[in-house]
Image (spheres, protein in one colour):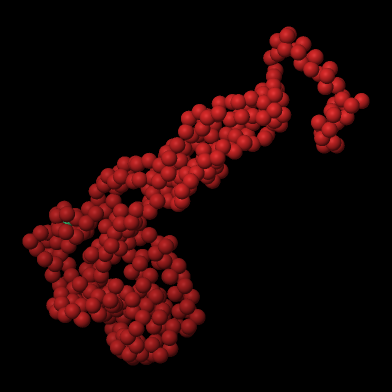
Length: 372
Ligand SMILES: [Zn+2]
Ligand SMILES: [Zn+2]
């Protein structure tokens, strides 16, 4: 397993102080954190940065590393190395894969990138669920070479530039003596081997771009902004690494007259002043078709009625929210002569005084007026 120089990984000088190392580590850890950075090599870089910091932030380990290089801290402390490569070494040493050991460890597996798909669904689809067919453009393992990158029938060979080490070392003289620096081999990009005849299908890239059709079940009760995670439906990994995930992010188009507040559905309903005064049974359009709602006599404008269980299904438990119907009393504007006469008769019985409602309840005042 070839490793990059820890100072190089953290981008600091060999004489860097603890503060410089910590500052540089924080910056890189933020940059490569897999939750933030979705590029294919972010996870590997993140682990590399952590491993480097683990050694360089510890005085004993750092001294050993300065003296012996990568062998030092591994041999001397032997713990806390969670990088893919390190694990591969241990695993394959235990099981003795012999000659393949070095290759497999060097060509470390990389997890595929996560993908995001923005999907727009209707108001009803969000409430009752649906199945959608998505066309996902993504990188999949090349079927021709099986992700090896070499034309079938040929095999990768040891990189001539780094002789399979994956890194190239340069030694230069300084006042402190000779300093050896190592960097990733530019020819094999650290893999330690090159393919003399790259796969014709993928051009040696190990993956090919395809458009995959997948069916997604949208559960009942999702809302605008809900994310659905489809594990392993992102881009394929490299060198046996796991595939990334696909995140389907939902947008819900608004309904003509229904609104949503969490699991309740809201409906504004107009009634006329006679229905409000005398009461009525009205038909209400619900998600499940037309339902009857009783408006009691003396209903004020703005009053709400709950129709239990006529709302949105709960996403993770049984049951549904409610349909909340808010009634608004519509004042008539185009009265006939007869209607006008009727209302004038009514007005006489109610008394003509205008009562400010905030002083005392309107009906209290009317009641008093009737007593007089
Ligand atoms: Zn291929
Ligand atoms: Zn090389």
